[in-house]
Image (cartoon, rainbow over all chains, first blue to last red; front, side, top):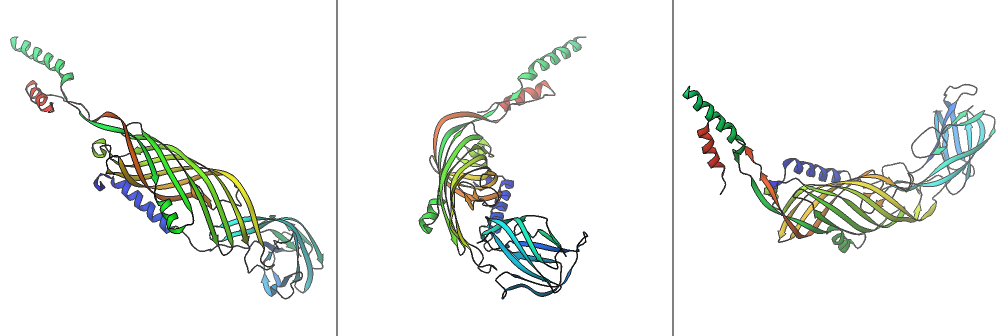
Length: 155
Length: 251
């Protein structure tokens, strides 16, 4: 029987078997947490800037700081609370303190078979109070694990 | 002048006789069959693991010694769980298409098959997540939730190279490699199905697999297949024509 099989068919089948076997992942290597990716801009201009020092923590989570006097930061990542439709952050930029509150909706997203389900979000509105931040601009309202720029903080 | 007449008449005979100077053709009787196949690995794995049940079969009819139409179908009851979620999927599927035998008739003899199949697949399934929870290291804490059962359709294309050989009279066994491309699934981009009956892993656009089939063959007709076509013989001389004509007659 073997001699009757065209050689090219044999090669194709062997390659497919190897391909199927070798491409089966078993562990989760992907990001499973969605973040609001916020960049810093100079107020009144369209120039990206770097915060000399920044401290960020969630309201009610003073003991668990996301950034603690981090130096020369250009992008911060803010996690959203999937059990709520709003959450807030205290931001201390160059020793000036502001409070940012975000309102959003959440929906489940399958990352992969290996990683399971994560929550993605859609930003709806924001409020800011304090002295450092001038304005906030939504660039991309879809909060995912894809590391896209979501908001710009002008200060 | 007489020589000229002889030459002319000889040439005339030669021209008249050329269309009749051919080698006879070879023919072979090939049985056309209706085939009923059952995939064996799915039930065997289920008996061992007692987890996911996959049952699949097909019926096909030979159109000629090369091509057959095929209609297949099956059922999948799929369960998967790991540390952060549980997933259930149950559904049926069907595939329709053609099989092409790449072996020459004198090699296949109606008993061997080495070729490729092309299919269009349709799957209807219900899936749900009874529980899932977010990353335990999440800043705001772990959130547990569930997603209710939802029924969807999926469409896909399949190419299946493979081989089959006759084990004993009218029973063949063989394997096929399946390479499938997902055309559409109604689940949307966020909750892609982890498994689609008849397709495989639904989180990717392309999936593959290997199937082993037992096939019952029911011959319903025999056809005469020409394995060697008539070949016109061009003669240079009348004398050699006679010799070749004799060699062309098959016993």
